[in-house]
Image 1 (tube, rainbow, N blue to C red):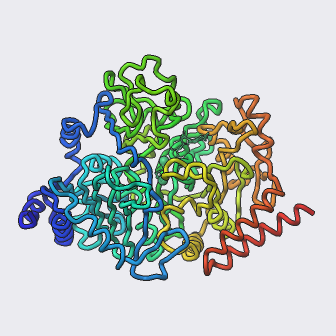
Image 2 (cartoon, protein in one colour):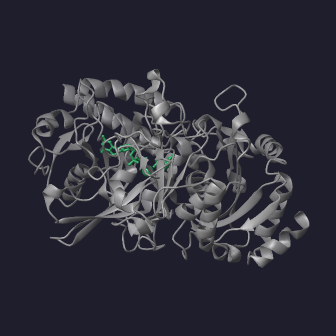
Image 3 (cartoon, protein in one colour):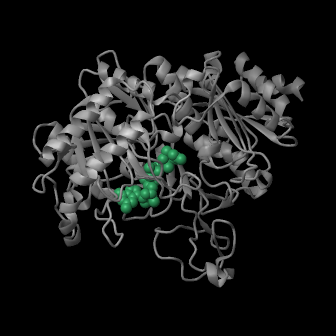
Length: 610
Ligand code: GDP
Ligand code: PGA
Ligand code: MN
Ligand code: MN
């Protein structure tokens, strides 16, 4: 096989000699039978092949459906490892192992594991093309899974022209699916490993075909490898959405980046439209929903872009009312792929919890595992039809409010940075933080409930620094220092804030309606930055007063819950300060500025009590 690899690559126009060497090495190791180089223009043919092979099912005109193996539906955090040759790279959360241990292990697992299969060579770029970050953003994913190819074409910029001129400046990303039925997922004999060898810019993932583990451009490169490269080269790589709000009356535009843990509202916020009740004064533009690369330009401006080319969105509760933009992004002929939702084999419709009324006629309906709903045993009639982490994949070009300049490598100026997550109490709707060190401190102490995006962790309350816990690639103290350094270079500092759309009442209901209404606290934040409102000073930040928030058109229940949503419970916060101290103590060598910020907040709380 190896002998004609060169010929195949040349014929496909893949001329970068270092890339050729990399492909040859892994073609030989994995024992793949054929090599195929992928360009975006191959999509229609690959889709056709996948439909014929039954790997994809039709879900309407130009829409597709796929299922992943039932034990392979979310990121597997405990199987995810950052490896380097320097033990000083070991952090609290990056699950560091020596590369001398992990590389042979992965090579053993991959040896011969793609026998009889095609190895697809996917050259990609995790950036809008043409800019100085291209050399950190380019990669080549090798995969033995056709579905992964089609997802990558939607999520990244794909084609040989992105990498031919880059020499050795590309990430080597190898994905081998493995025998999914015999990997012991979640047992002591688990054979899966998802390893980023960060100091060699090499990603080796074995044992999954789920997007978060198998689309190596997105999470392993776009976040884990990217943040390691950012540390060494002075930029930030974060699990952030990025949106722009224009006030048409004043002509001003504010861009806000925000980190919320997986499945905690980034995609919905970035796609949000102004609530109907606010008329058409505000226009919200979508830049990105999951990743932002952030740097300071020659003029001292903090800027960021979305490295992705698509959206990998959570299906649950996506409907016309919660997120009309998402619904418009997955219309017929958008090329969208639905994964692990419910599917009707006769009508080819898809459905998920919260999409709308559950279909009354069960004929043809199958749940996300492929089991007929009509055949369900008594004990299982109420089980969800779709997996809670079921997803849709669609390209940015399909998103109706995507910004005109989303494809510009210069990115946009960032005026605000927000952190948030699922917190059923304590965290108010929004609290603004003026001081940069306190903003970074706030990000480092982000505490929230984990979600179904990570296997086996749903509902677990944990600290998730800047929402990067599953993607951190280097020690937290260095991470904090890199943040202070980069933001320190910005002439105009961004305004930080913490938000929470997920407070609950005693009966478990959400106290804030969320979704499109989340624009209201962001509008207040813009006004605060502009000096138009003052808010109420508290020990943990500035909270909007009732009068300052635009409440037009909100229902009675929301208005009566609003005081709780804006309240600060001092006793709970003082208890939290103790927990934070324990959390931060784990990070050896944390910059003194962060400790100072911590003590300032603790002291302010104490004083407030007096
Ligand atoms: P992401 O994974 O961070 O991008 O989160 P998504 O925007 O995809 O949302 C994850 C889940 O949270 C979905 O089921 C959403 O319907 C739900 N969600 C998003 N925003 C809100 C909100 O403001 N309020 C409530 N209650 N749920 C939300
Ligand atoms: P999410 O992206 O943050 O939109 O859920 C995927 C993930 O982080 O696993
Ligand atoms: Mn994410
Ligand atoms: Mn998302």
